[in-house]
Image (tube, rainbow, N blue to C red; front, side, top):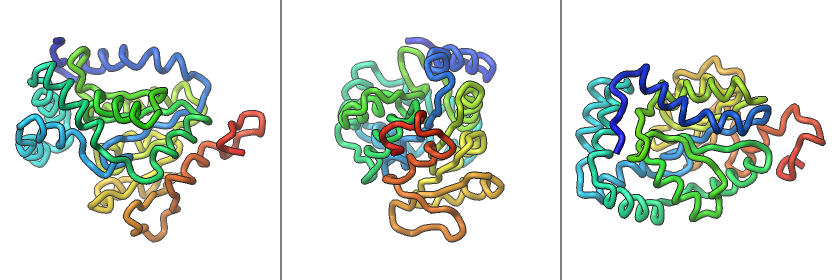
Length: 255
């Protein structure tokens, strides 16, 4: 197993090498970057993974509460997961991918968005789980970006999500991002369109950073919308990437 990078500079080098083929493949297209846990799914699949592996996720929570969403805290988060054996990673990851629900309409959103744009689930959690979950839903063509991967690990958190979004902004026609918490702040700020999926805490830690975003929207899965912010549904959100495109550029989902 490869070791996690020790510092932010070497981490960015590894992350850049990992996403470079994706950037080259989607140049000149719209891009959708969707956070996974509590954005597409109501659950924190990483927490569920640790629980099913017989580990306590509380030390990770305590570290984030103490240090905030910084590089060292996300490195610790990755280290805990990557300390498990490859067989445990495979068995528990497969089980969680089989069990974890998506929000109603989330799979349909991804399917429709993929007709119009290059779509990626971008997760600070475990990519193995999200690849399995997407395969389960017949969405295996959608990419997954994340660093808790025993074969090629890197630290992937708040700042790294923002950096990835900036990289896609540099080559895409536009980028739409979906997230639920402050971990997604830098990604949302860098995106052309920011869609907040309200979590169990009404995403207060994320919304407080997005007051000046020029294209801010939200989805309220629990049915409690935020006044004053444009409301979408998973069924309608893909239409954000239809705006400003000619009839010849639009796919079937936009027509």
